[in-house]
Amino acid sequence: MPQLWQVTKLIRSKNSGPFELTFDVIFKDRESYEKVRDAKLISAEWFARTYRLTPEVVAIINYDAANAIKITIPRPAISGDIDDTDVFGGQQHGPLVELEVP
Amino acid sequence: MKEIRILSATGILGSGFREETLKRAMALEPHFIGADSGSTDPGPHYLGSGDTLFSDAAYKRDLRLMLLAGRAAKIPVIVGSACTSGSDPQLERLVGIAREIAREEKLIFKLAAIHSEQDKGYLKKKLREGKITPLANPPELTEQVIDRSTHIVGMAGIEPFVEALENGAEVVIAGRSSDTSVFSAMPVMRGLNPATVWHAAKILECGAACVVLRKYPDCNFAIVRDDHFIVEPPNPEYRCDPDSVASHNLYENSTPYELVEPSGVLNTYSAKYEAISDRAVKVSGSTFTPAERYTIKLEGAELAGYQSIIIGSVRDPIILRQLDSWLEGLTRAAKDRIAAVYGAAMASQYRLDVRVFGKNATMGRLEPETRIGHEVGLLFQVTADTQELATALIKSVSHIAVHYPVPEWTGLITSIAYPYSPAEIARGPSYRFNMNHVVEPASPLEMFSIEYEKVGG
Image (cartoon, rainbow over all chains, first blue to last red):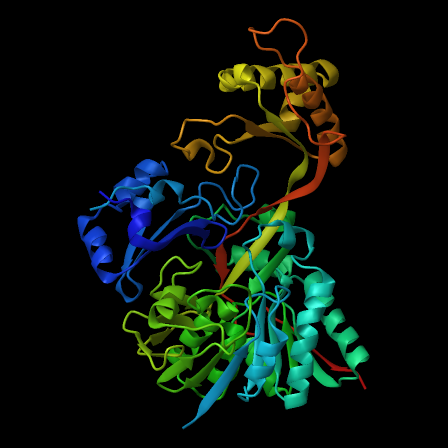
């Protein structure tokens, strides 16, 4: 089974403002996108487990126009607050990179 | 066919663009030059303190080239979110830089400065009237939060820009404003379809970010017509394709389909992205729904405390194999030492945090990986009400940490490598973003005053 990085051209995390964290998974082609999208591996449950949230606060959007899946969650800490570890939110996507996909 | 040609100088003023690209773009006869100058990305420090992300020299370099090009072609230059957060001191800083450039280059122009800093009395009244409502994942907003804030800004929509342009402003420098309103104001004012305009603005606001491979910050260019726009980077090394343009909607936005502005919502669900050459993309089909109530997003920051830190590293395999318990013991010993020196009551006056690079410094408690390598980096951080206290306390931590024992070694050990003398670094004030709310003003201009000034001459 390939890992997610092998079928994508970009996996990134980023602030969507100081209170939300958003992940973009942009696939190399339509076929890999549809395979992963339809397998529903990138799910609210997976994010809830990995980022210790309840599934209800995880928003997942399939973006066909760019063969991409976008996931948005509440930020683990407000950007730049004393508890925060990543002001830009740019290095929170690590666990996604090696996710095994069909 | 009516069209507005837009030159976006760069993604964020101060980050730069190529002079040669600007020149090429000017040959395409834009109707105005725009640039956003702000972001909340680098964190709360800039709004909290009034400090700026880039140096004055960096802002001046970019703004000089834009003003020279704009005045030579007699087209407006529009800059939003002055100097990172668009608070009053930051607006004044950028206006001051524009004045210096005018003097040095003998430029004359009518300048509009749009103020986005908010009056606390006004906001407290709005809060009491129930005219302030929360957005996603908000902290609690009370009158005390408003009072504690060092700066609060409102994010302007296009209306203050349109007002300034209608009053003949040739250069507009705004405080906090939505990145897109910088680029949408003139085309909407000239009557182009707002759906096309806002979509083009979203694609342009990050400069060359929507190209296939952005190697360095640079200009971007779009021709906006009523039912479509065409984006084509003026730098010949860059190209856009339908994927790169569609992908840009994902960037720092919680959904690629919607863009919420004070006056309405852009919906790109039915947008079409077509290649019209190997480097230009035509975009059409978005819709724009006017807002039922006009709202302005607020951004505020308050002081969270002062911090002093120590950076060090550990290489001894004996310490590394018991790192967690060693750090726990060390932290307890440091707190005991602080209590011995300053009394037990000090415990509630400070916070000591330890971060371990090479273990979980990036993801903290969420890190699923448990392995560590042959060394780790340590960051000790004390937060207290004053800088003096934070530094005084971290000095105790420093000495305890550097000699904290492990049972396997007998005799005094030196357990951390400190790269600096002194080990402690006073980091200064630390701020906190304290609101994620919108306010409903009586009119779109109510929260934004505009000052006009004849600059130069």
